[in-house]
Each structure stands twice: as C-alpha cells, then as structure tokens.
Image (tube, rainbow, N blue to C red; front, side, top):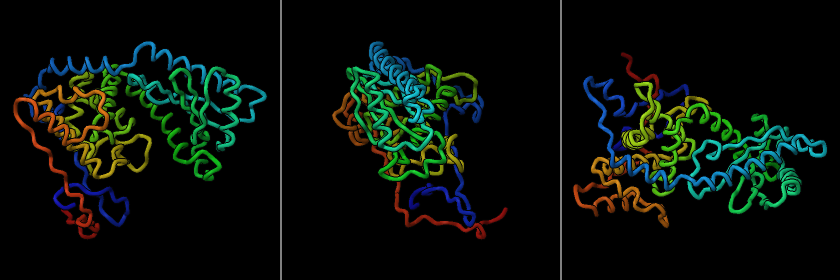
Length: 368
C-alpha cells in the first residue's frame, strides 16, 4: 500500500507468503520491556469525569426492572410453548437471553432486550408468524410486531426482540430466500449465544462492564468509534482491563486510557495481531470486519483522543452527550483547539490506493 506499511488483507493461498503481523506498542507492558519504568499515576480528574459520565449513562433501577420483567415473561411464555402439547409441532428447542441485557451493559434509555429461540427445523417466516400469534394470545397486554428475524414484543416503552434460528448451525446453508429467516439473521443469532457465554466467562468483572458502557457511549457519539460493533467492544474491554503483565484488573480510568492508546498505536489496523476471534476459523482477527478506511478512521480518532487526554482537555469528549449527529474527527479537533492551551493537528489519513500492493511469491522470498 503506497505510503503505508499496512497490507490490504491476509492472503490464505498456499502459493503466497503471509504478510508478517505486528504487535502494536502497549504502554502497560513498558515495565516488562524497559526495566525501571513505572506506570503513570492515576489521573484523578479523568477518573472523576468517567465516573460522572458512567452514572449518567447507566440505566436507572426502574428501567432495568422494566426490561427484566418483560424479558422474563417472554422467555417463560416461549418455554411454555415448547412444553405444550398443542404447540409441540413448533419445534422450539430453547430460548436464550443474549445481548447487553444478558451481559449487564445496557445504556440509559435503551430499553431493549434480545432473545434467541432455537428451533428443531429451519424457521420459516410463516412459522414465526404462527408462533407470534399464539404467543400474543397467551401473554396478553403486549403488542407483537412482526420482523424479518421473528417478532418484537413491546409494552410500555420496553421492547424484547425475539430472533429465530435452527438449532443445527450447519442447516443454515439450506435456507431458501423468502421462505425462511435469512442466513445472516440466523448466523447472528447463533453468534449472539456464543458471545453471551463468552462474556459471562471473560467479561463479568464490574470494571469491564463499566468500561463497555463508556465505550458504547463513545460509539454512539463519534464517527471514528461508530465502526466498532458490540462484540469488538466486549473483547477489547476485557483485554485492556484484564490482559496485563500482572494478574490484577486495571481501574476503569486506566483501562479507558489503555483502550485509546493501543487503538492509536494501530491495534485494530491492517496486519495488527489485534485480538483473535475465538468463534471464527483461520486465525481471524475481530477487527477484519471493518474496511481499510474504517480501520484508519478509528486509528486516527484514537490518536486524536490520546492527544486530548494528554492535554487534559477531557471536557471535549463529554460536553456533548446527545449530539444531533455523529461528531466527526474534524469537529473533535476544532473543539479541542477552541480551548486554551496547546493546539493539536488533524492526523493525516493513510493512502488507500490498492494498486500499489505487491504480492510476493513464496519462491522469491529470501532464505536466511
């Protein structure tokens, strides 16, 4: 790639050499690499700011109870359909709570829960409508809205999305378009179950959950962070809090700063070792779902936020909690430079001209 050390992607063909991956610099490991180097002291102002923001974006007890109550009713109703003699032909094998309501990372005002229903056979659109109709009659007091993936159950501002998939993952390839729930929806449902189990085992620490909420807030306000999906946020939050040289979790403030620092160093950039997706084959990294331009925008945004943190202009990141549109990188730089103190510059984008990528045949590689 012209003007960049990054490659477009990994080449899995046996005829070509794999591009070498790199591990971005991580300040948490400085003491291991450079003996005598100590981690920076906790920034009390940043910690206080993050705790204040966290209190504002965490759902109230009433919101959580409302979501939990309706979710419990929905799952109980689905289980009764699975056990009922008159509804046994539906082939319901089980219902699982997934998503942020399962992981404990909901945001304030986001009163939505997700439930995955696994069926014995491929879910047809007609069958999901039948289940929804019978379910509505049994539950009562709720509105059912049919969707391509199943249906939504709504009551007093709370929504439970019910997504259908066949239990045997391999059968998803037999989906007929227009007849069954789509392949992407069914695959997402299966991965949602796996991700929820992973989070239960690896992201249950309170500091991880708090950081995930903070990162979700960044994601819904800034263009550069909007490319991160919930699964990537779960994995990187767990990594920055728990993945260190010592067997102890970092504080929320230290984890937030580390998140920004490693992304600024190219942690989710092309050819970075990044984080392996435990549920994908071929050593796939979680960040490869983003395009090259999105990876670059994410890296540049993190570099800008890193400068803002170093200059202690924290209010720039949190003064506008409800923007009418996503905040661009240019707007972020302008807001930072409007404050007194040192000015920052807009990071230059990398050259994404793909025509200059050179593939090296394995027979032409030098042998040492």
